[in-house]
Image (cartoon, rainbow, N blue to C red; front, side, top):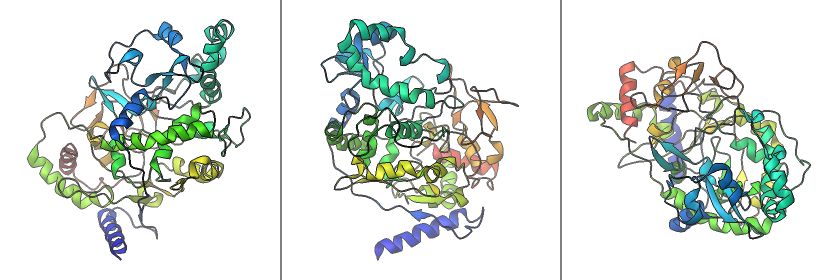
Length: 460
């Protein structure tokens, strides 16, 4: 009875907060219930995250060092040979005793910001835009030499080489800064038996042509969420989803079980991460007025903050949010991937992980939102000011990745607006999956009111 009352309250609050924009056309926000989660040790989770061998293949250490040299920053303060590689890589011992450098979760879930590395901050600097112009393992002469003169090293690297050659040509995006995680997962499972996880060179699923971009959400938001991913279709055991990177090189189910046994600890660590504080002075009077406006217009979907914080865990139908629908539509247009996962080893647990496709997106928590630009699920809006004022959103824009500058006033990346797009250099919001429309809920606010809301958001 109490849950039913709570649900009615949450839906009613949401209706009040966004009814000024449009009617629901018969659809309403949907409450996402919580799932049972594993407990874990956060300290062990961090250790496994930055030192663990959850991806068990990679580039031989000597070969990697010859190509890249020593990473002198050591931002994670790691010891041993791991002190010599960037935070997105880990030195591990492969199955045959060879030391290799493998990618880890911080490739996507860690980022340098104003000279400091933040674990859990989504990496918006990765570049998948010109993969066709870059070297790859298939044509790499040095690897071919290694195969001949050092077959044991090549054996240790082969699972990574195989996966890399399979997915690399099919992951190209239209601009730097967006992520292809959904595409990567689809490509990898298409080459895995769902029950044994054994690799097959010929794909067992039909692979769509489209590459749909996403922005990487901050890890510290996970502690509030009842479902994973922007469309909320990741239900059940979060640890099973978090360990999916293992399918890049996994040999079989026995290896997956071993890795899965450690990821309850990893999730415990992720849930312990706190958002970074806004580093400059906040106008407290302006922020106080912004809090009133936020609670009136935004909290029904995004929750409340402070001493009496709450988060409603609402899935907002696309008919209401009206943001780019390519991501959620792909789940309905390509059900073979949903079916693969829901019958796979990942779903065969006491508390299984399951994919439940929907017709909307989850309104995320906004803790630390000041540092998580760009915005919307596809990273199509460079600043919060533009999120709150759809008329201020640029159709074609680009930012400087070599010398990035942050706009601490409007909150987001400083960018250049273009009259026409430059292929692979410009975020082109007219492209499929890259749209910046929707979420017009701040358009009715005055410029002064938007400034107040932004000032309040700096405090979250």
